[in-house]
Amino acid sequence: MTMPRDRFFEETPFFTDEHARLAAGVASFAAREVGPLAATEEEGDADERFRRLLSLLAQADLLRYSVARGDAAPLDARSLCVVREALAYYSPLADLAFVMQGLGTYAVSLAATEHVRDFWLERARTGRSIAAFALTEPDAGSDVSAIQTTATRDADGYRISGRKCFISNAGLADFYTVFARTGTRGDGRAELSAFIVGARMPGFRVVARTRLVAEHPIGEIEFADVRVPAEDLIGAEGDGFRLAMLTMDMFRASVGAAACGMARRALDEAIHHAKARRQFGVTLAMHQLIQEKLAVMQTELDAARLLVYRAAHLKDNGASGSVLTRAASEAKLYATESAQRVIDESVQIHGGYGLVRGHPVERLYRDVRALRIYEGTSEIQKLIIARELLKE
Ligand SMILES: Cc1cc2nc3c(=O)[nH]c(=O)nc-3n(C[C@H](O)[C@H](O)[C@H](O)COP(=O)(O)OP(=O)(O)OC[C@H]3O[C@@H](n4cnc5c(N)ncnc54)[C@H](O)[C@@H]3O)c2cc1C
Image 1: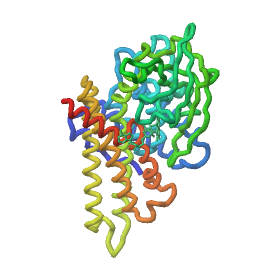
Image 2: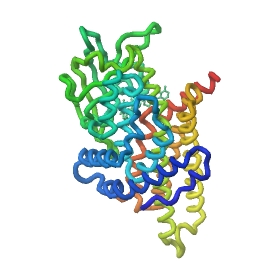
Image 3: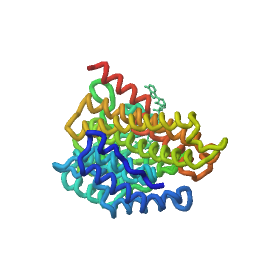
Image 4: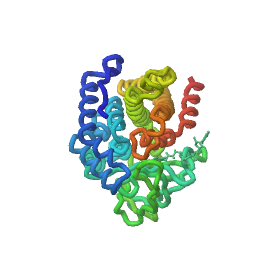
C-alpha cells in the first residue's frame, strides 16, 4: 500500500513548505526502500534487517533529522515527527532505527565536551555507530529515582556498576548513554549523572536479548566495574536527571507521531478492505456500522496529529518548561492510546484476515502496543499532565 496524498500540511498552520516537501520525500523513499523490507519482517535475521534499515536511512541522509548537531542548530521537532510518522507507516522497525540514533545521542549533543560530542554525533548521523539510551533498571522503571547503577569517581574517571533492562538496541549498539547514581541529593533522592559507555569497554556485557510481542531489538545489559574516562561524563555530575528529562521533552511527542503513522496505515488498510470486501450483497463500506468505525478512526487520527504537531510546533518556537512538558505528554498519551483503538478497529473491519500472521494490520496490532509503555507509560503521562495543570 502507498500512502495516499496528505492534505494535513495545507490544512494546518504548523508547517513550512520544507516540512511538506520532507514528508513527501520520506514517504516516497519509505515506499520504495523500506516497504519491501518490512514485508519480510519475522523472517531471517532481525539484527541484519535492522542494520540494513539503518544503512538505508544513513544513505538517504535522514538521520540528521534525529541526531542533533550540538552546535547552534537544534533539532527541528516537526521534522523529527514528520519523518517518524512516514517511516512508521511503512515499518515500525525503520522508525525505531531512526529514532534510537537520536534518543541515544541527544544528551551527548546537549552537554558532552566538544570533541567527544562531535565524534559520536558524526558516527551516529552517518550510521557508522549504533546508539542506545540506558535508563531503566529491574527495580527502576517509571520511578527513575530508584536507579541503583552507581558511578564512583576514581583517579581520572569513573567506575560504573549495575544492570539495566529493556534497553532498545542492546546487543547492537556501539555506545550507550547511561544514567547512573553519583551521589544522594539533600532531599535523599538519587543524584544522577550521564555517561557514554562504549560496548567494547571491559566489564560491559549484554546479559540477554529479550523477545517482545513485536520485532524490536532490546535486552538487558550489565556494567561490572566499567572504567569510564572523565571526559565521557556528559555535562556535570548531577546533570543526569535534567538531561534525561530534556531528552523526553524533545522525543516524547515524536512517539505520538510514530503512533499516528501506524494508525494512518491501519485506517488506509481498513478503507481499502471495506471498499473491496462484499458481504450481504454490498461492500462492507456500505454498512453504516462500518462507516461509523471509519468516521471515528479518522477523527481520532486527526485529533492525535493535531496534538502531536502542536507540541512539535511549540518546541520549535522556543516553548519550554510547563507548557512544553504538558503538550508533549498530551500528544504522547492521546496519540498512542487512540492509535491502539484505531488499529484494533482496523483488525475488526478485516475480520479473520486481520488476524493472519504477517498481514499489515496484524503486525501493527503487535507493533503499537509498546508505545503506550516506553518513554513514560500512559499513566505517567496523566500524572505529568495533572501535575502541570495543578501548579498553573
Ligand atoms: C519496547 C520497549 C522499549 C524500551 N526501550 C527503552 C530504552 O531504550 N531505554 C530505557 O531506558 N528504557 C526503555 N524501556 C523501558 C520503559 O521506559 C519502561 O518499561 C517504562 O518506563 C515503564 O517501566 P516498567 O516497565 O518498569 O513498569 P513499571 O514502572 O513497573 O509500571 C508498571 C505499571 O504500573 C503503572 N505505574 C507505575 N507507577 C505508577 C504510579 N505512580 N501511578 C499509577 N500507575 C503507575 C505503570 O503505568 C504501568 O502500567 C523500553 C520499554 C519497552 C516496552
